[in-house]
Length: 408
Image (cartoon, rainbow, N blue to C red; front, side, top):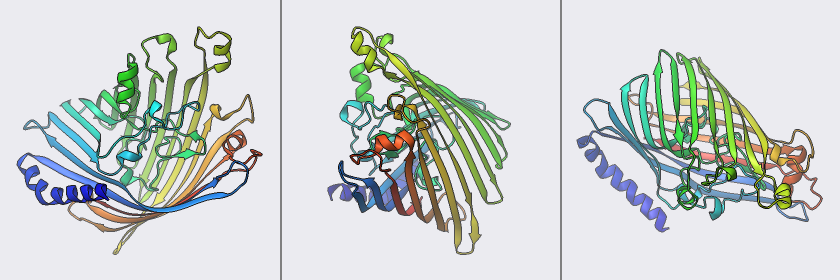
């Protein structure tokens, strides 16, 4: 209750006093809020029986306040910051490591609220050459850098893994999305790029960096082309170290590569994204034979999603039905060379109803969304994830989400 009162108090203060302060300081304020009702059925919940675990709850998913502005009279020096007043405690770090995927304090733990999600300073030399430094969303792919308020189906895809999991396993390449670092970016006649360096540990693993060091930085970036508003495409890359110890012999290398394509024409939207990557895992068997050395086995993971949506414009508002198919495959799911092609799938469908939109500022709107998502697995992924004693009963996760959201 105390946290709720704090959030309400901050919201009242922001609405009453900050607009005047912002105008005096050349500051632009914006933000959004999402209230969810969630019904979930997360499959087998017992080690010996096949009982189902179901739950339902209301939640304030996000309440974010953004601030943007120019420090100089022109836009040479600008800044952006974003605070989430309710989501911080839910941001458990779940790294893409089957040997350490429980979100414990040893690999990130939790953050208190409110939490500073973004803060960066931008230097604009020219449109095609700018420098940005601070804490930001990793410049990789299409879906990851998007605002969660703009997602057509409320949840991120399995290949990114933000907030998504399957029993006993983490999914996706970028569960944390954000990091600290710097990158150059720009655009010229449709061509655009973002290339830079980040810590590689996630933005809320600063304590881990301080404890273990972070000698090696990760390289990340995307190069793309926009053909007007109708078609855009890009390729992304990421290379770095999974651990960041001072001894290079103990670091586990990782890389990711992605392709994204978006088609947006005449109220129809189609998005396709594919990401493949490899992360070295500790080879426990060899280490037991020779404890004085570290051994690593490279394991490949890959995933994709295909999303389609169509917006129906009416006098009463915009109605947007959407469908998405997800596929995520990870060699770490195999058990001693087990079933081939172990994979996790997700089928998601929903509809958004934007019942209010400010004609002068379309970013100020309110909407109702309803989404149903089913996550299931095949092959060895299903067997390893099963909580049933025989290990053969498939676990199917069902989610129904009803959202009331507003952007201001």
